[in-house]
Image (cartoon, rainbow, N blue to C red; front, side, top):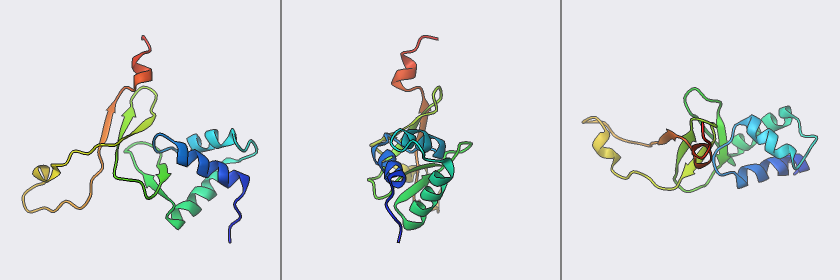
Length: 126
């Protein structure tokens, strides 16, 4: 049985309050505010255990580090800012994806990633 340490609680808290999926370095940085002695190796071990337990999901964005978010959430998609690289959840879904599938194929699942600039980066004058 695993102990629910302050470090594990910090990691779980970061994931439960995130506005989108996070990389391990992002989780580590945010969780250190709650547990200053938290090491990156502990974050990797904890994330691996949480994945094995089905508590979190790994989100893959091509060319990026894997990101993680809590499992059991409602269906959603993602927007990634090309300036700051943050990823945000989109709580809507294009419903008519069947029209995009080649004839004779069957759609089993989908992920939608939109890319652009977030509100904060748009307001910065370059």
